[in-house]
Image (cartoon, rainbow, N blue to C red; front, side):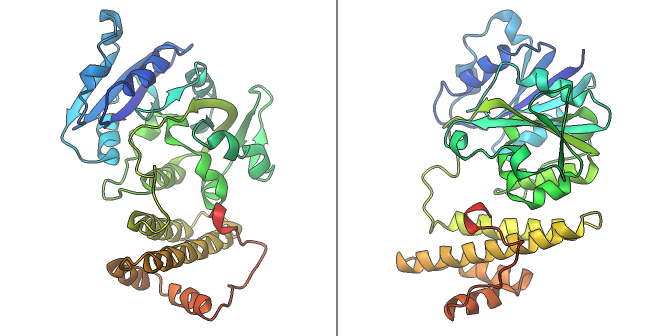
Length: 330
């Protein structure tokens, strides 16, 4: 049986949230796992959420304590703590809960030759309504049904999937990777937004293939989250658009990316430009200063935004093509 190490980064302001996530781990039908909880200087102590564990259950949990450095730093500390015996590494946020068969499906998928990454479906907190099945969005050109794994699909090129809208459903709490891959990739600690996409890009450059399951893998929770209650004119939203633009440009430079993927990324980069523009317009309407320093960084990194702005000021929409993706999906 393959040993699975599970990484939970923990930073919460109230107790009772982590205990639900931990309970969902102990409820797994697949039992060959070890839990690594990284206490990232949490205001609510991790111990308060582990008081109900039995002595035996405590032997299966390792708590790593560190000063607060953000979720990427915490996940990297978890990756550094992965044991030599581990064959699979799975991620779970402290406010999310797994379906009881999630690990079993992940282990089955990652036991197949050439498969390095696994995802399951997301439910809860709006995802149930918005979830787009991989079979519908990816199509047979990118995802092939697996006869021996119902509701599961083999993804040939992870790079190509990251170009399109379906990557939004690749929640880290639904992600499991081989331990070999986990030992060769890390989260970018200088990113405080879109670090999940950057991590998936790193995986895509090293992974051979992936499997996507449309069976529910986890229910999303409502603990401390950067995006909860964020308004459209928030400066953090502008920074997210800038960060995604830079990551899309980096992915576009990948020599192994298919030409069609570059065309799709061009449309998505244009979408980020327009979203950034409208964020700034809403800031002005709300009598807030525009993010001047971010404007300067954007123009230096992507001068084409000036064309987008001038087109909007002249009320001219960008040239349309079959590759343009609606902004609400970008």
